[in-house]
Length: 433
Ligand SMILES: *Cc1c(COP(=O)(O)O)cnc(C)c1O
Image (cartoon, rainbow, N blue to C red; front, side):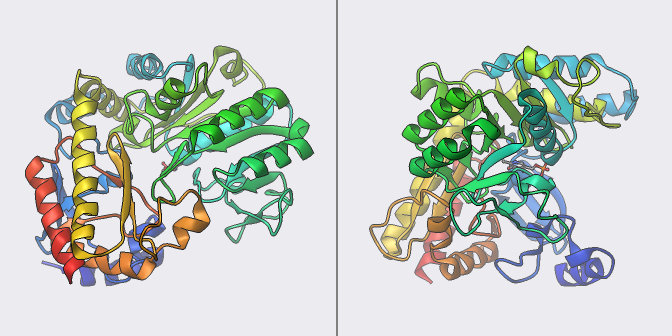
């Protein structure tokens, strides 16, 4: 049997940093990443046979937990029928129909293989439809690793952003304006200055890539008004929140709170693949018909709408659409967050938390009485050292939280009340120590 450390060492010889996606390397929290050998329900097992209660869920997709019988059956059946055809299948149509039925406003979808691909394609479509080049994104939101979206704020407002990665030419991000999340004044200024040139505003409606930060209702309402007034498209990146914070995603939550609210384009991923490589972007028929082969905006993919991945996604969506599913999931997630913050209060440690559906976040503010962070700067100002100690103390106790303070957590319907109780007990011990 190899230890995690041995595997990590071997991995680092052949894979940069030993991982195929950077956050898995534990660089933010330190220590050795766990090499996972198998998963079942709410649990993961590592190479050393240690069991963990899993609050990452593959970063969101595993909403039913691991190895759900209905999903497993659908995937096994699909696999025997063929892995990939490069020709259309009925299951792609079924999955598109299922997603469209759940999210009001989406009339057509195109399936792709990753959230990055979906975000990049939605951006091209927005630019193609509007004939404009500039885009707005918000600091702390992640929309995949396409060049134009790997941008951080410049030194002042209305200056365009800087690449956050080497290898992204400054010219490629010169059209990307980066604003502060939840800052209405900045938004007003940006639209006043360059409104006629903005193709789209892309946003995580509940930002899960800076832990868990909600777009405030007045901010979202004004964002919609400004986009409409200036002819810019509002793109909801629901790769994480879609079919996770509610059956109809964050779209349904904002539509309920703001009369008449709807985004113009959507990006989905994670849950819609149920753990397989699958994502999508969609919108009204008039916009989507600008895509090839109907229109001038090119987009394609060898494995797009893969028959095994669509079987996995469809089976997952069918389970979560059952009556009462989200109420039960939301109640369990709330129990976890209340339990964690309660344990912190008992230990005299400042902690704030929030959740929606099966997604949650918690923070260690540096001073008692501070509320939930509203933007990237306030998230990053929370106590990182305390988070890292807590992360490792929980891992030692068999609880696998996201290994960075800027990542959201996920509860699945496979998490039992006893799993939640065990997690809260572990948190009590960890916070006391
Ligand atoms: C995960 C994520 C992406 C990127 O999806 P990948 O499948 O990792 O490329 C894009 N946007 C958001 C909001 C995400 O959470």
